Length: 148
Image (cartoon, rainbow, N blue to C red; front, side):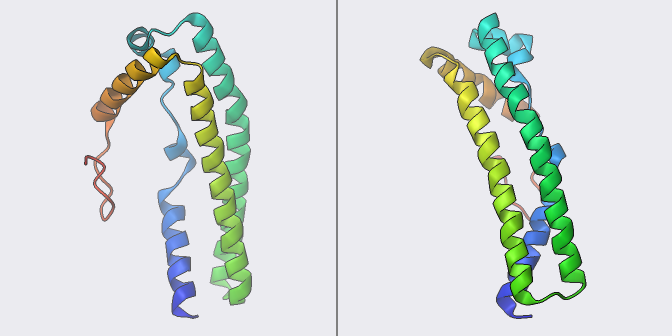
């Protein structure tokens, strides 16, 4: 294999190991009483945010299943020493699926925040920053220090 393909393959495998559906789970902040109080959420806002979440979750689950399938195919191709061009194509499929999942999640978060008033957005950011600080995981060995 050429050095560039080896680097791409190793990078893809590292990403596969680090990214999982469990890591994609989020804190249901709109259901937490203290968070609702700090942000000043109304019952209607909570219901609208939950509807956005409930609409997105099935899409994300299906997307994760597809990503798992594509990654499985890529692993088999690498194990069987498939043609480099075919492996590169499969890496592109895997990364396109990963990008779709990230885009869907980002749009969900955008739509949730669009439910909030400007004042609530300020309070949300402060409450979210505090929650992140309180629930931060230690940095992954060899990865960036998230405390910065």
